Amino acid sequence: MPSADPIKPKAKVEKKRRGLISLMYKYLAPQRKLMLSQQCWSSKGARSLAKKIIVGAVETGDLPELGIYHLSMRVDTGATTSALHVENIEEFREHGKRWVSFDLLPEVHNVNGTVRITCRVKGRKTVKRTNADSQKRVVIDTRLNIGKKSWPIKLTLTDRSEMNYPMLLGREAMVGRVTVDPEFQYLQDVPEKKAK
Image (cartoon, rainbow, N blue to C red; front, side, top):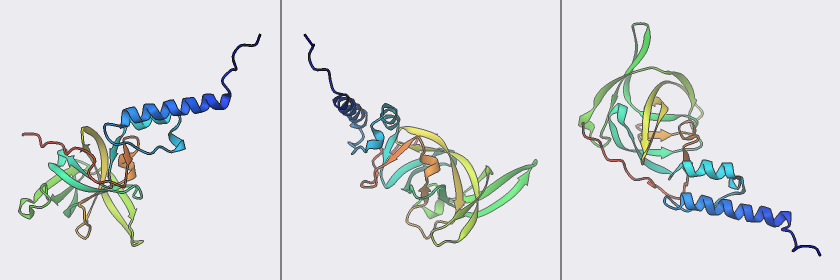
């Protein structure tokens, strides 16, 4: 006598797919429930998404090495590089190394608190702006804290005084660490400023 009908291959795939979606919701539920696309139905995709933080179109973060806390930044998946608003940029050489010095407002809304920062130059990058102009910018390395996560990023220094946000977070800084939900803003908890 033949045994019970074996599970059809299509049903197995559907069962696996539902299990993966369930697993993804389990890991993502504390942050936000996310509508999942077919691209995320592999177990590798589920694990990758579970490790990422979900950010909104605008987010708050810290640049502790530069002394900036609670900085509002525009999250832009259309921009390759990240950019920070600085003023009075001066490049110089010291002991054969390239350095940059610039003015920064650690507390964005306190214009009297301008601080002069000096950093090593990581490189220069030509950035094509929205108005189709190209601009050569200085690039520095620093750390970014969003929520409870922290990682190194490259930042270009430029005048963003005409923009609504002093920092733009681009794709290069988000790869492998961030998923963007543009429907929302400020999805991550604001990190507390550490006492010095």
